[in-house]
Length: 412
Image (cartoon, rainbow, N blue to C red):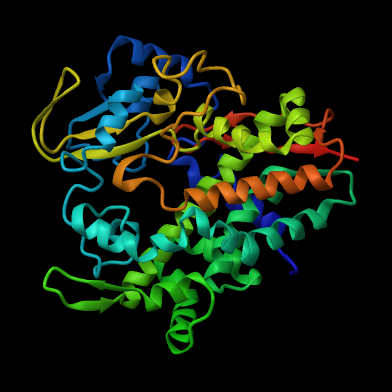
């Protein structure tokens, strides 16, 4: 595999401070956790949005935002967030019914679906994302991508890992699983803001896979069948496949990049922990899981309140929006001792980093495979990996999409 990536373009597309992410609070450089701790201690549920309650006054756009005509509430504890995830009948992922055959995009994808519709569509692709399928992803796309990227800088003694490595892995993995050539991987990432451009790239691939399926994800989608409420069997339309694909591209090429960068930054800032992981690779998985708990890249998701309800002491009217601050929930001292500490030896408990309930992240096992394979390969191939003392140290920034700034390293 030859990566042939335009690194300057990669840096433009994958910049937390760039225009692509600024609408979600990418320019926020503070530490939101002290404010979230205070809010969680004061009450389980507050009126207002997470960013307003944190002290950000400008409007932001994210799942469940802005909807200025709806009342907004935010939850900050583990139990309160978990209970909302477990009650999709009251707390829905979209404000209304979803037309899967309508406009192409995430609003018509299974991310917004609920009930039987969500179960039906999720069931079509779930088999490709179960833990047993992780090796399929690693063997076909992840491992080759990781080693090709490392090969680009392994002989230089220094590198920038956030964009040149972390950002490139998931976008090449997911586009590779669609059958998109490496040379067009960045075209499809850039096209996410213009669905017509994505369709233009995917349409010939979908047509080719309908004619002759291969061992890839588009082939899974074109062959998938579901039975509707009347007992009639259907295959996905092109429109439905495009919506599936855009959802997977949006989730797969963004969150995994930022979470891998967070994990690497956290380890590099703690050389003794990095050394322990290098010496005993059994510690790599708990190191990744602890980073997911300690600093999830998407620290807030929202749910739409379907009916008037009394929720942990607060009345939530039908039509309001409940924002679940999973960043605060993942540091709830009622669930974890010393929750602000990054501790890879703590007893493992499930966090909300990948959500919970029916909408638990479909791609979480692929994301874990990418992070474990990527970080493991760095430790294998780059001896004495460390932060570059002559460069600006990485920082975690952002509000609703948190991630690391540049991660400059030296090795050898």
